[in-house]
Length: 163
Figure: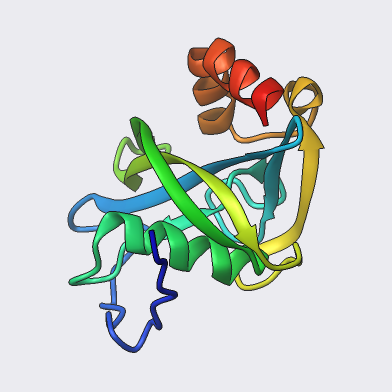
């Protein structure tokens, strides 16, 4: 399967309000496994600034979900990936002290494998690095990643062993 790195110019970014949005923000993320390790990024933006998570971000207008995964992973980590399969769909809804919705994301999580490139933090990532899957839960990770790993641990551990 040929993969195409798509430029953001093809899919213009619409000015979405991510804080106190008028509608949920659709986002994608990738669980990338290689040689028993998972690729993590330390978030540079809220929600979850400074915590470790998987690479991902908002889908641009007109962009297909799998295209968004490839673009976001490349923008954040420098890697070109192949999207393999849908893993999960999760919702992140955070309210402020008055009960108003401060963040609302619908995140489509995919499994992916690296094809080329060198890991480097870029764009929305403070750091990017491979971490042994068995060590991830001991890191300062986002609650969203913690729940995803707990829900899919057996499958991911099996895939990590195969990889």
